[in-house]
Image (spheres, rainbow, N blue to C red):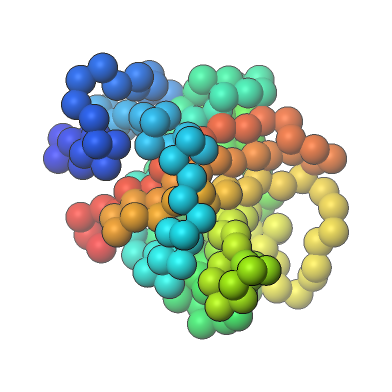
Length: 195
């Protein structure tokens, strides 16, 4: 990630000095940081989830663990989201983040570009109070978890729960486990210059 993208992340936080920045993990590119003020659940904005229709494109995705065996570790990679034009599944995509770096389960290839078993699937559910708006937006990671020829009811999972969406970024928190959360943390996705 170049210096201008690091500055962009800080600008999104709306703060100058005194940011609590995470140290880079093993998969980090030089100069990359993640501010928990931006990516923490404190910035939840349910009204912003209506912007899910604009999520297509290329991002730099950063995840940090706050619990689990890799607590405080960070990983980063590229994320691409492509329109799927499907009710409840507006986008699919792929990422090259290393889930092992943060202690998250890997269910198949996160980098799979296969539309029928993509590495990333964006799932939405309607808001009960306002059916035309999404009540939740989730990115499910792993080609095995996202196969269209089977419906999974249990097993390991890694899911990113979107809590806010802005013009050039979105974020929230994530969990991974088998019968319940074994590792949790926060994430940010910042639109890259190539989008």
